[in-house]
Length: 187
Length: 305
Image (tube, rainbow over all chains, first blue to last red; front, side, top):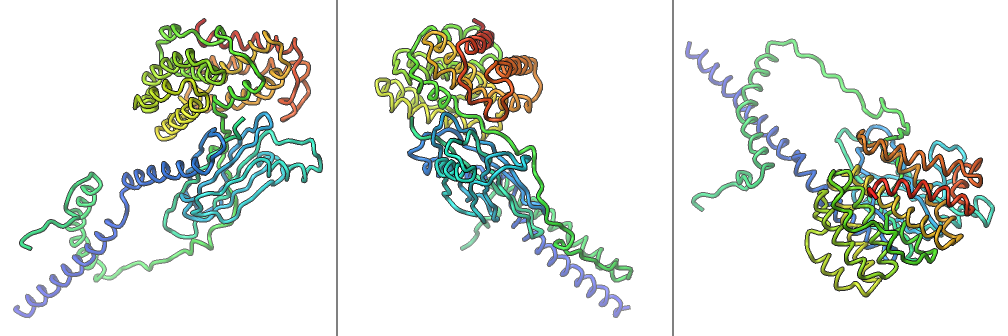
């Protein structure tokens, strides 16, 4: 009887110790997991800071707008496309801030949208992640366009910026964002 | 140290409260659950775990997120600057009357006319009309607080700086750019893209109206080419407005913009042209008049003239 009691107490103690240890591990993991509201607030702060940096890098061009593209890295490579209109032969500057891109992505600029088979690539920047300032002016894009079209008379009236977002190769969910600020030369 | 609170237990924020609650739940629930699992597994019958390698199951494909394929609308200030480049003079009667603001009672009317007055403000500043600009910005500020954009003018500093620099075009323009940035930030941070589209519609229509009126009055050929170039925005604006939630005012505006777009595409010089070529046309005087009539009617409807 005594032997059985000792055995029961021993087993119960063992179970309690294992359970407590498991609880400690899980609690630690739960604490490590960022709270979504805190994460959202942190993200908002980052977006504001990176927007400001890209606006500073836009100078001396005149501010026209900012676009923030948010994305979640999925199991697939994704593409996001932004159309930018160019007016009156003005020269524009596009400033990308990739500090919010936690995994690499490519920036590609075309003369036509992705559903147009005949579009031409005017510029690309590969494996962008973390950079504070990637700038491109439309005079460079127009020069390339004239060269590719073999004509001095053609002028870009709009461009298409594609973000090619790499697939997430881990099981951990990941998200990011790109900031694009654009402006025109003071007229 | 006799006693100290662990930083983890200082509940300074809701997040920390949540974290603390998780700790409590895990502390009580997990040992019991673990013990149960241990007892059950000791009885046998455990299932074999299978793992599927993630990389092997995924194919490398490009997925186009169509919801994120969109156009960026230009700022109202850029639209005003483009027309200003044609050398249009200032004509006070082209701007919306300041006392008309009392006619705007709904949020829609206030939002779209915020855009109208913003375009008038840019027109006055670019033409160095200090008195008019000083009056219009007050209307813009008042409307901004009524449509939730009060943060743009939250400190009187913006208005004071504007008034102090009224004689200096470059300084006043710099302040307008700050207002534009703040407006964009408010729209972005609060997910108010619908409001942004309505305001832009008002500003664009007013800019086109001023351009058309100037063209009719001063017969500047250059303005016809600029009106043609700006019509590219009409299609993008219709698309942007169509993505927003349905509403009678918005639907009526979309119908009017579609009518304007059809009128433009039906003009002799434009008909048959495709793509960007259709927006690179030197409109004839008669064509400018046809387009101007549509623009004037649309603008007067918006401002309740």
